[in-house]
Length: 140
Image (cartoon, rainbow, N blue to C red; front, side, top):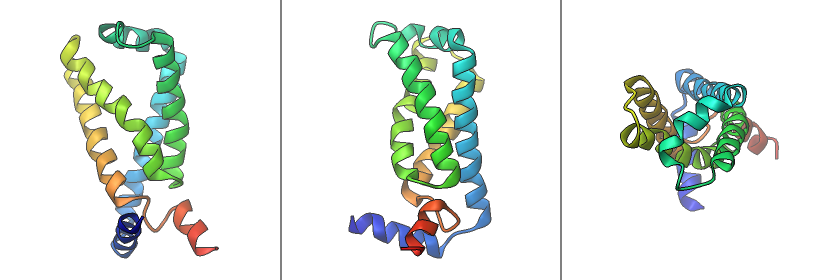
């Protein structure tokens, strides 16, 4: 708990609008990916075909879509950002892993890698000063 508080203090002292725009963009991207997975479920089933024996396909489809929709919204507004990113990490690692198990798709690998880097950054940085978390903390 002390570590999270010290990270939050550092992040609030070193916050910039550019970083907040990146956080919002990451959240919107994840939200749009969730909508994409809902509207094109067959595409997601084809993507996870190399991992078909490891987990239930429909469970995976529903987990990915739900986590991206809710997590994307939470990340975009800056509410429970670290928790939302922790839920996203297995999906992002899976997206990278699928490229090495199945057919290599460089565009998707690059996208998943960039999302992973930003997710790890915001997992450490937090939601920043211009977020719902900060506003709720200040109004206590």
